[in-house]
Length: 336
Ligand code: ATP
Image 1 (tube, protein in one colour):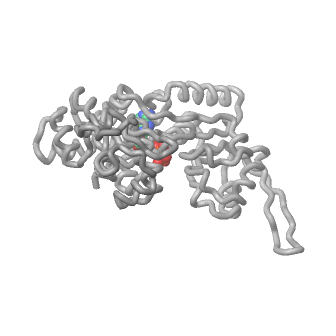
Image 2 (cartoon, helix red, strand yellow):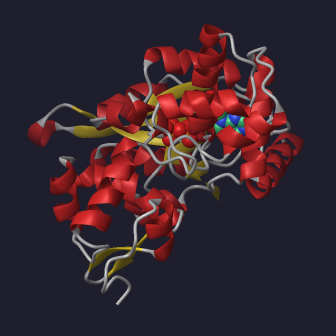
Image 3 (cartoon, protein in one colour):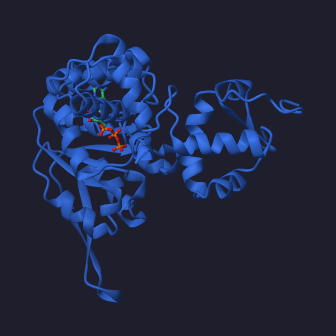
């Protein structure tokens, strides 16, 4: 349960509804990512002044930083309808052809996790993005012919957590790529203050700051922790303050750095069993009983980002800060 709270990419239906209620609808309401906001504003205004569809946009960055929200804002701000799809839902070029051929003029097509789309669909998308046209194969075998189909002009907004996995020809066809960064604590406080207002939850400044420090730079996690704190204050009849935040998040095993049970298990094994490392990722994963994929894509990037471990050619090593945070005396030979 506590792991779900701090994993940036887990979404239940209830959470999707909750997120929907908190999504900013305009660039002005979208907190942080100042540079990206300015760039998008310019792109949308220029397109509107010229009376054309805005350029295709690629949004790259870790889960929960606002890619879907920005796609919705692009449609909203340019007054165009939005069609939502995702890479895993497009397993054949036919799936993509069905979506593209039913777009209305000027529609914004959002494809989440675009790096997971089928190869054959990617190739179809190149032509669609460039010329608003696709070639459809009719018939089979020697008698198959390709029939060109004109599409209505559209704006593609692609989102990816793995920009490096996109083939160059696809990446090059986006007129603008935005790289979303993790949020600073003051920005997260603002995200939280806005969400608290919308939820009619009167959490004080110190309480907001306490959550902001524990949400791994990620608005989705910030909002999720806020919801748990609100429940806690309600059920226990507590004032909405920093003490309530600390008590609620202790209950859910989220520590002051935002580490959860799995992060702590990895760190403790690295520090205590392997004396701070170096140790290989697979060995760490087996020791905590998790998939190495989960350790590599979710746990490790955060631990590296907050400076608790470093990656070396010989394996993962705990930093002096890690020994300090866990209150363990460094073993002899650590940091050698
Ligand atoms: P994924 O990659 O998992 O699809 P995402 O990057 O698309 O994630 P969103 O779904 O857009 O993330 O955002 C998650 C939640 O965080 C939403 O409820 C949204 O309201 C909130 N949020 C994200 N960015 C901001 C922001 N800059 N200001 C205010 N709220 C934000």
